[in-house]
Amino acid sequence: MSVIAKRVTDIDAADVPPSAFEFFSDATRPIAGMIYNCPCGCGRRGALEFRPHPSPSWDWNGDKESPTLNPSVHHIIGDQTHFHGWLRAGVWESC
Image 1 (cartoon, one colour):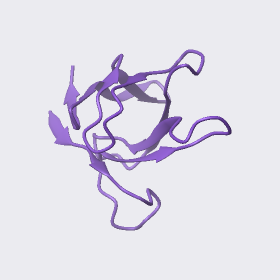
Image 2 (cartoon, rainbow, N blue to C red):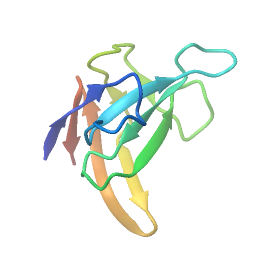
Image 3 (spheres, rainbow, N blue to C red):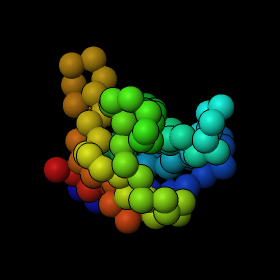
């Protein structure tokens, strides 16, 4: 499965698709991570903190429109995996 990630300004808007993402800030960084809609289409959200935040955290390539994250993203709800894969050049790719 490959799904194009779409940057949005309001992740809470009614028409936001699966795989959408929005950046968030913290007290020290204007972009500290991202909130994303699960690429599987389940409608659930996840949040990913960018390094140097303590683990778990992700390296981000700095591209605001076509981000790449490392390591992989494992979106789990309860004991069920909804998505496990990579965000590379703005595309969610299943492992």
